[in-house]
Length: 419
Image 1: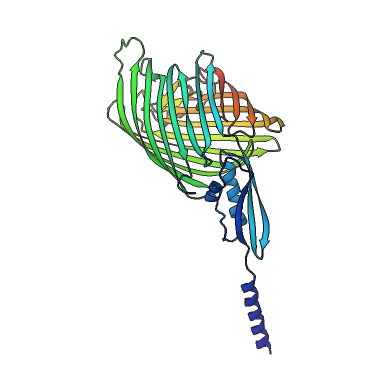
Image 2 (image 1 turned 60 degrees about the horizontal axis):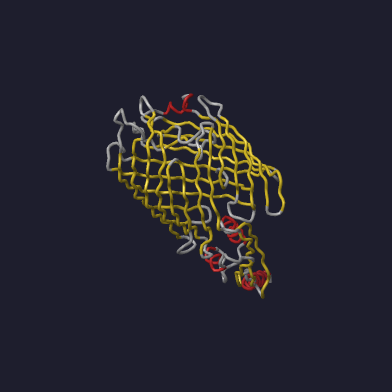
């Protein structure tokens, strides 16, 4: 009797498993979007009609959509359709995406430079970034940029860039600092590949010409160069950031590796690589702690044209315009951002920061990182004026005050967070 009872229980369990069908996605619908194409959202989404209903895939899709420049916020809803089928709705709050870019700065040395541009971050409703800029930094410069991360599929994309950049650059010889008119004209093509939600890479080539012309009377017969170069580039990014309007939480790492060939012994072939580590932490309801750590090395040639620069607009707020160069860098930017006022679309945010960095001298050793004259420490305060419905509409004002040796001070203005 017990034998038949066990057999009956076994048959019943098989029958229950066969009829307990798992929930399935009947349809994926996108709503709330206007300029952003629904077909684009469906193309990049992991959730597909006919597949099992997976809450983890839905949550990853929403995180990915919230990272798009054209989206200020997104959320999902799930409704029963029939039997074991469910409709999934992705609700989109769009950003305005035709954005002017403005960056300018000044220091107590009366330096002044600016860059203005215009970029569309949702060209053709496909989250294609297209635009360019004009820069005035003693001399005139311009660039055109195209970037389509999902051009071919949810994994494959393409980027292309043209740049004609001219600046006045200090070049540091043994006994003097010489001023050069530096021009870099470049053409770049990159293939973009997204492995999964957290990881992506870029591979590409760049052909460019560097032109160094001495400014003023060249009494010491300093070199003037016109050098044609090829650059091979690889970028690997791990991104686990979560966005909630002006707040960011999580970790991100960006590794950038380049190998540059040259046709002139004054500017020899060299390798350069650096890793940016970002960590963001929500603090209470209105606070955000933000950090960037950069560590980088290049070939340690004893050259006045070293690749890592100390610069106001890149790494140390208030330090000035390209005041030094090196073949290695250790840099830490840390700041606390606090929402002072928020009403509808507008946010006023204050921040307190410390920018600190040190560099290895060309041809030097790792002991250079601890030399007092190589260490720069600049604390400061700033304000952010944020429009929540326009992509990257963050106007920033920062004032950095140096406390290290031979320090300067100055304002840095720009669009977007500093990092």
